[in-house]
Amino acid sequence: MNRWIAGTIAFALSVTGFGQASATPVASSDTVRVLVVYHSLTGHTRTLAEAVAEGAARVDGAEVTLKPVAEVEPADLEWCDALLIGSPTYWGSVATPVKEFIDNRSVFMGDKVGGAFATGGSDGGGKELAVLALLTAMLNNGMIVAGPHYEEDGFKFGGFGVGATTGKDSPGVDEAESVRAGLLGERIATVAKRYR
Image (tube, rainbow, N blue to C red; front, side):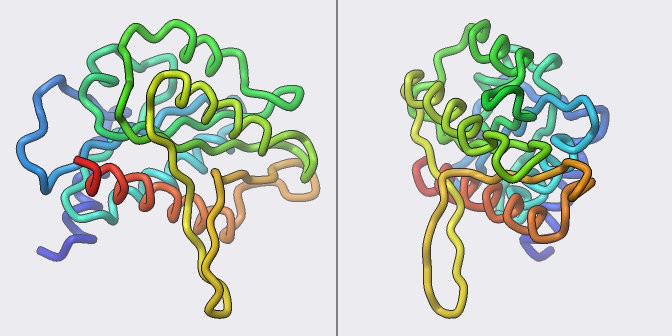
């Protein structure tokens, strides 16, 4: 079975019923457990989260779980090797449910790998600020953060997260944004696997 199919199967199994994580220790160094959490009112952030999860599932040995922040339990946070958090942008920052999730989690996430993504209605509505707020919270919790890597015309560069513009001029997550989200998920899973 090729690694893409194995990763896709792991992703599909974990997404069923929003995924059920367990606190079982990781079986081997070939496995990496990735938790993708999000808050979404309109469905746009969930769509971006799904693209992130699909990207993470492309990494050989990745077990990916996708959950809304309201359904995340302490056992989910203990289970994962990597955590990706997504939020819609509210007034240039993260949504209240995401902030409450960060403030109220009861598990220290030190040395786990983290990444962030955000959606917003306009190009300049603060998506990057929301991503930076999420990364700052991760750094304050002792996590190792990473962003996606890109290559265009032979030039390699990186970013610190992913954003999607979803307002009336761009009424959903477009294909380019989905591709970038997949690269973010793949990068975080890859870094977490190497770090393990």
